[in-house]
Amino acid sequence: MKSRNVILPIIFLLATTFICAQVKKDSKVNSKAKTEKTPFLWEGANLYFLLTDRFNNGDKSNDLNFGRTKTPGKLRGFEGGDLKGIIQKIDEGYFTKLGINVIWFTPVVEQIHDGVDEGTGLSYGFHGYWARDWTALDPNFGTKKDLAELVKKAHAKGIRIMLDGVINHTGPVTEVDTVWPEGWVRTGPKCQYSNFENTTACTLVANLPDVKTESKEEVTLPPFLVEKWKAEGRYDKEVASLDAFFKRTGYPRTPKYYIIKWLTDYITEFGIDGYRADTVKHTDESVWADFKTQCDYSFADWKKKNPTKVLDNNPFYTIAEVYNYNISNGKLFDFGDKKINYYENGFTAMINFEFKSDARKDYSTLFSKYSVLLNGQLKGNSVLNYLSSHDDGGPFDAKRTKSIESGTKLLLTPGISQVYYGDESARSLVVEGTQGDATLRSMMNWDAVNTNPETQKVLLHWQKLGQFRRNHPSVGAGVNAEISTKPYVCSRNFTKGKYSDTVVIGLDLLAGKKEIPVGSAFKEGAKVKDAYSGKMASVLNGKVTVDSEFDIVLLELKK
Image 1 (cartoon, helix red, strand yellow):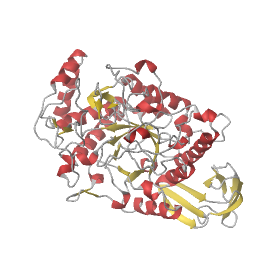
Image 2: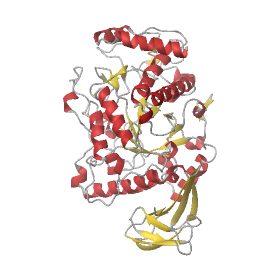
Image 3: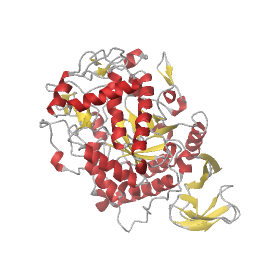
Image 4: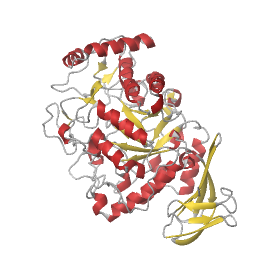
C-alpha cells in the first residue's frame, strides 16, 4: 500500500530502467531444481515480490477495461502486466534460475473503475490496493482461470504462491465508484499515528474509506455489489456461499468477516500457500487472528479435497506488513500507548523495515545479529528482509550502484529474503518525470539481459546466490558461526529431525587461489564443491583451497 505514516516524494537521479529476461543457454548457472530431499522452509525462503501490472504483459487484449481511458500521471496508470505474464516467466524458468521458491504479487481483485487525483496526476488502481469487489479478479490482471494455471505451474516447479490481502480499506470514491455504506466504512478522521486509536480508527489518507473492522454491528451487502452480482448472474451463488460461511463459523455478519471470507475463498479454490497482509497495524490485532484461523481452515479443506496436489506438510503462511516494525523490537510493536505482539495474533513472520539500514554494516555484525535474534527470542517465527520495495522511498541502493553487494547481503542473511522485481538486474529506481512512489514502480525491461553485459553480470550473481539459498535451508534458517573475521568466513547449520544441512560461506576473498578455513563444519577429507565457481576441492588440515576468479566462495558437500 502506498499510503503510510509519512509519504515522501522520491526524486533520485539515474538513467534508464532495465530488467532481465532469460539467461543465455551457455550460462554457467545450474538451473536444475534441488531434489525432494531438501525440505522447503518458509523461515528461510527466497521470495520474489512483484507488481502484477508492472512485471510482464502476457495478454495485450486485456490492457483496457471499464473505460479507463483518462491520461494518468507518469507510471500511475495500468501498464499491461498480468497473470499470464507471470505464467510466461514461470514457464521460461526465470524464477527457477533465480532460486526463487515463493512468488508474492500485488492484489489482483477487481479495482475501482475510475481514477483519482492525489496531487501527483490521475492514479488508477494498477497497484491492486483499491478494491471494489474482493470476489472478482480485475480483468486488467486476468481471469480466475489464469490464476488457477499460475498456481498449478508454480507448484509444479516447487514454487509457492503468496497473495496480498487487504482488509483495512476499500478503494477511493470516484464519480463511478460509490462509497460503501456507513455501517461498512468511515471516511474520517485522517490517522494521526500518535497512539493506537488514531492509528486504527481512521483513514490512512483523504478519500480512502476505512473499513470498520472493529465494528460489532451486523451489515448487509452494499447495494452496488448486489446489483453487480445480479447483473453478472452470480448473486444467488455468492449469497449461498456467504450463508454457509456464517453458519459454519458462527461469526456475526460484520464487515471484517465478509472480507475474511472473500479472501480465504482464494485458498479454498486455488490452493495458494500464503498471504502477505497489508496495513496490519491499522486494524485491531484480533482481525488478523481471526483471519489466520480461517486461512488455516481453508488450507486444510483444500488439501483434503486435493490430496494429489499437496506439496508438503507446511502450514499456511502469513506475513504481516506492520509499517516500521524492526527486528530489534523482538515480538512487540509499540504504538506509544500500547504494545502488540502480532506473532501471537495471526502471523508467522513480519516484514522487517530495519534490514536496509543493517545492510550497511559489515558481514560479521549483520549475520551474527540476525542469527542470534532468529534463533533466540524469535525462534519459531521469522522476518522478511528487503532492500527495496514498492513504497519505501529510502531503499538501500537508490542509485543501483551496489547491486552485487545488495545480492550478497540480502540472500546470505538469515531470515526470508524478498527480491523486489528488478533488484536482480539493477532496474532503475529513478524514473524522470515521476512523483512519489511511482518512481519505484517502472516496467521490467526484459530486453536488457540480451543487450547489457552489466545487467547479465548482476543477474548471474543473484542467480548463483539464490540457488544456493534455495538448495540449502541452512542459509536462511540455520545458525551462523563465524570461522574467520578477515577474510570473513562463516558456517551455517540447520538440523530438523533426521535432516541436516551445513555450508561454509567465504566473502571478500582474494581472486585466484585462496585457502578457506572450514572449522568443524566439514570433516577432514570431505569432498566439497564451491557452488559459486563450480570448482571441487577436499578438506585438508581444516582448510579448503579454491582457485577461482571470484572473491566469494559458497562451499557445500559434494553429492
